[in-house]
Length: 144
Image 1 (tube, helix red, strand yellow):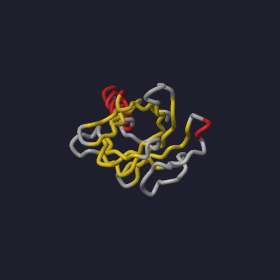
Image 2: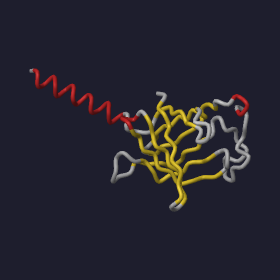
Image 3: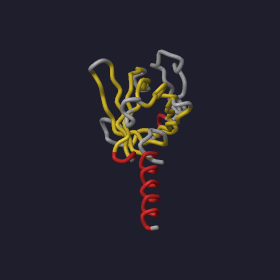
């Protein structure tokens, strides 16, 4: 009986740990220069495709800002509510990586290929934007 209970508990722990290794949830982004919280981004999944939208900007002066430098369908849209991550899917070879989509740097209006990698048991996520061999990686913190 004890081994059955132990197996059930281990199975539950493994399920919870795997659930945290997905990029879905609410994430706090950190400014590269100031190291201060910059925004909250909600990442959701539908049909195996991950998207992310800005829910909040921490700088009160930027709450009504628009993506005036964007060159696609997001041009002149409010930054709060803006979809900045599109078309990301789980890597079939590496279940811990998500990629194949794009991420928008709303401050510069530029899009980059992206890779999302939950780390530290899903408490943080490495978010990489890249063009060719040039890339920048940020670490986002899970809020919920």
